Amino acid sequence: MTKEEFKKVLDQKVRAAKEAPKIDWNAERREWLENLACFYRKVEEYLAEFQNEGKVKLEKSTVTVTEDHLGQYEAECMSIQIGDDEVKLIPIGTLLLGAKGRVDMVGPAGTAKFVLTEKHSKGIRISVTVRGEAKGAQEAAPPPTARDEFVWKLATPPPKVRLIELRPETFFSALTEVVNG
Image (cartoon, rainbow, N blue to C red; front, side):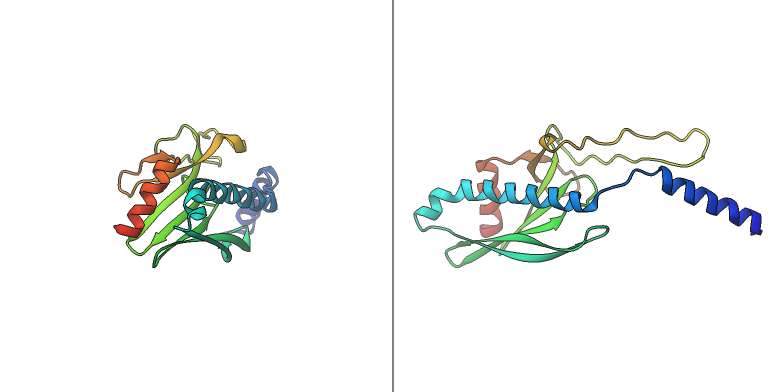
C-alpha cells in the first residue's frame, strides 16, 4: 500500500468517526439498571402474597457485569428461595442482539430467559445498518429507543424463539419450570 492510499484510508476513518452518532454509555448503563429494577419490582409484586405467607423468600445481592463500552459495573441480582430450592435471577446485560436487556432465571431444573424488547415484538428482531461508500448500500431505520416502547418478555428456547409478554402467569410458569423441570 502506498503512502497516498494509506492517507485515504486514514481520511475515511477520521471522517467516519466524526459523522458517527455519539453514544452516552453512562446513560445507557443507567437506563439498563432502571429497567432491571423495574423487572425486580414486578417479580416482588408477583411473589408478595407468597412471601407474606412465608412460602418464598426473596433476597437481593449484587453481581459484577462486564460489557463492551459499558465496562465493569455492579448490578442487582435476586434469589428466590422455595423450600430447599434456590432460583437466581441473573442480569446478563443490555448490549445484546435482538433485545435491550436480558435476565436469566436459573434453577435446579433449567434456565428461562427474560428479555427487554419492543412492546409489539413477538420474536427476536435484528436490524442491520450498512455504512460506507459501497454503491447501492442502504441504511435500515434505527430501532425505536423511547423507554416506554420496551417491555419485559419471556423468550422461548431456540431455534424458533417466541416472546411472551411478562405477566404473573408467564412468570409462575417459568419459575415452576426451572424448579421442577
